[in-house]
Amino acid sequence: MKKKFTGYEVFVIAILTILQFSIILDFMVLSPLGPILRPALNISPAQFGVVVAAYAISAGLSGLLAAGFADKYDRKKLLLFFYIGFILGTLFCGLAPNYPLLLAARIVTGIFGGVIGSITFAIVTDLFPIEVRGRVMGFLQMAFASSQVLGLPIGLYFANKWGWHSPFIMIVGVSTLVAIVIIRYLKPIDGHLKIKTNRNAFVHLAKTVSNLTYLKIFAATMLLATGGFMLMPFGADFGVHNLHLSLDQLPMLYMVTGIASMILGPLIGRASDNLGKYNMFAAGSIVMIVLVIIYCNLGPTPLWMVMGLNIVMFAGISARMISSQALISAVPEQADRGAFMSLNSSMQQISGGIASYIAGMIVVQAPTQELLHYDILGYVVAGSIVITIVLIWFVNQYVAAKLQKAHV
Image 1 (cartoon, rainbow, N blue to C red):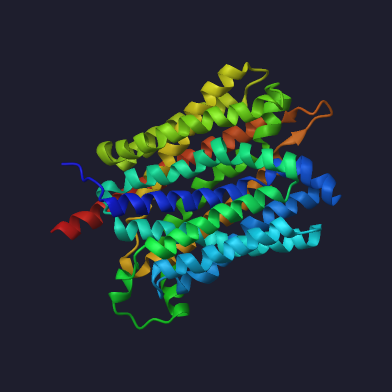
Image 2 (image 1 turned 180 degrees about the vertical axis):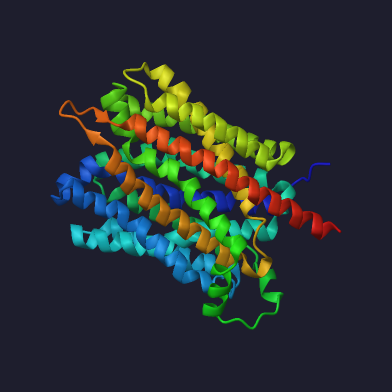
């Protein structure tokens, strides 16, 4: 019999999804602001790239530093501490008058924002059993799609009307309301504190890092992040210069893809619970391999066809991310969840930065503005997906054995 969520569980899923929406939007909104922000601050593309990268790098490093302390506090208090820091960092972005202060503000925002995702997943793991975790992850995945459908168009509209600072101020307003709701209605999440342990933060971190099983999961996570971070930085350029889409068509492409992802995310999450999380991951991976190779070899293509390919490709991405997150969440012991999730998130951020750098080495721009070697990028991504199919199989075997042992 399928478990029905209680009213409070629905609230937790909703507030965590909206919280994730604000975090993802803050990360994503900067790239499309480039054409407005660069002239306003008189900075080069390379300097703008540093601003974008500063968030990911600081987020990854802060996750490593916070991991040892992640299981020492009530998760609600920890979430609020980092979320308030994220709000202040975003406010500084909205007030920054020049490049150095904007760069500093992005570093501050990354330090706090980069840890929030791991705390969110630790909360989900604490409050929801593995049998329904795919459904929960499916709803959380809607945050990414929502940022495409609602956040980016609204953010760009604000930027065009009131300047590049305004999207950050908008995010601060939304995030402040979310923080107030969390303070008022989210119950303490401190079950992990009832497990007695004498380990201090640094010993706890060392024990988590030295766990061989956890290290295997971190390796899988690093490769999981590779595909998206390799393709995403050049997606708009490839669409305009290789697929011959117009700049006016890009928002429509993102919006249609986002709406489809919002619909498919919860359905995929439910299917992963019913059909098996690894089965869903493998199916999504096969879809991704085929679509990535086709997409990265395209020339001039009609908008409707690009939309269709993007929808199917994002369905594959959602199937991989939802099912793998649900599986990986079952790996750590309760006393280690916060540290594990922080380290796992850090590996994802750092490997994403490395993947973006490698992608920049592979792809070059011809004098005609067309991107060259994008097909090679597709083959590299497809190869990484094949390896993750094997690595996640081992994760699935471990989780299955752990659950069987727990039921004995």
